[in-house]
Length: 519
Image (cartoon, rainbow, N blue to C red; front, side):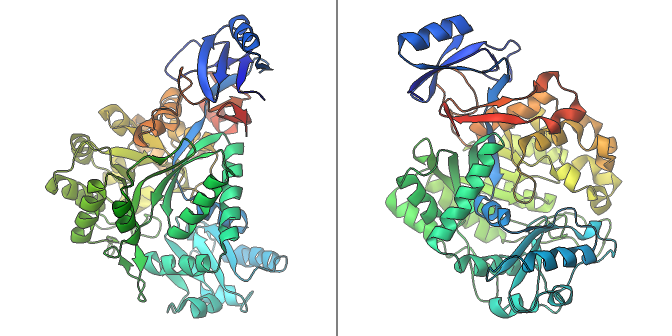
């Protein structure tokens, strides 16, 4: 395909805010150069000796932007055992048996189990895994990626002590790091490539890679230099290290130190690869009851969660990153954690700098106002509403309105973008849009009935997946098909603005284009 291409005979939405789509558009050197009728665009393409692509009347949308996912983990789990939907520990053991007998890898990884679905109504243990596999390390992460179960061999290799094999937060990070240390540079590149190809097939053209460590950064930079990727990646580095006890050591911030000395600022790179900021993990998850709440969990009153970082350490890291002109992406799920994050920004007088808060799963109305006043951005994961179907049990009816208040955030004027936290959630954007628009109504999720005012309409949801991502990642050339923007777009089998809410998750991406080229 030449550097000039006219895409004709389609229903192309330059942005989701327009009601009248264009028939055609012209792409020149990877950017949108003109919008108009098929006749006009065909004539322009011919005059420039370009190609013409007939899209057969299909709907065209700007490419999706996933603001928050773990590209390395996604690549890892694309090549591991999928445990989502497992209904019992017995079924988990059967899946392990089948998988272990067919792979020769030195480690066995699995992801996606949720003890809330198990018929045994308990967490799996190392003994459950040892019965099936005791010679190779086995690490099965919970769906939230904040807890895991390890077999005895994995505990031995990692040096972690756990009578049950269950590990959370710091020790879970240690187990993942131990596996990553066994990977070669080429292993890392393959994992990333697998994830990027998969993402592109689902209509994702730009990705916010959170918690990127030095090893994965090195692999990405090699791919960037060798022009092995077209999918756009915006990188949020992981500055933390773990000491021998598994605690997170934020005072040892070699990556930030190196970036500061080199003078690298947010947006360093090109249209394909940019270093954007740093990711800080401030608390855990609701599923593992490690998210830090202001009041105890309703279904386990002796637990309130806990922060993964102290306020003093968070303050120092926020000040340093902001001074270095890097964008902060701070994980905050529990409302107590979010209070601490807001206190840090207020006390340091850092406001209106476009820093991000990730997840915001438990957010009170007073916090929404405070977030707006501080000029912070929201990166949320709507499919949590469906996957965390038990969330109201965790928090109780009195706090139901605090759970994933997407509409309240949106209408407050806080810039908001969608992500999946993949592989925590499935990467398919249409399932995320479906969750934002229905809140699990068709699945009978209790939060849907308790918070009907928090649903978004289809236009609002797609906006958050396109222009919303552009805004919170400070990248004005992605997220829409306006003239001068990068020609990242998708062709879909059904117009989502004409589809019923219940069928949104079934929409298929027929083709993904990045910079006007089919990926």
